[in-house]
Amino acid sequence: MCALIKSNLELCRIERGESEVIQSEALDYLRRFVSKQPDSGKPWDIAFFDPPYVTDHTPILDIFGARSSSLLTAKGLVIVEHHHKNNLPEKTGGLVRYRVLKQGDSALSFYENQRG
Image (cartoon, rainbow, N blue to C red; front, side):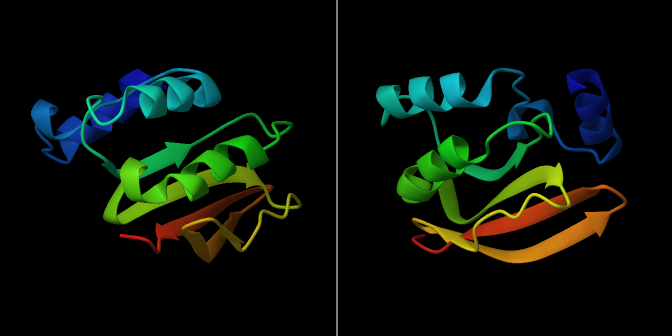
């Protein structure tokens, strides 16, 4: 999956220094990232969360919601792919869902940072 994302970034002419693709267990990575702040790097413009359908999305959304101002830029987004029957919260901490895009059995929930 990371190779495909990197290929798409190249096709969009996004320079390597302007993006970072990370393959990791999301909860583990976020906990490490948050524990190292403010030295861990700059906040993200977009975080795409693509877990298996059976995953409980709550822990990840809770971390992003509680730390939205340090994890995301002022206009940062969190995009969560999930099963269309899995209802995610409208709001969590500093994140507010503003769109749900259904595609077959899948859905994408778009959250924006309200704490900017």
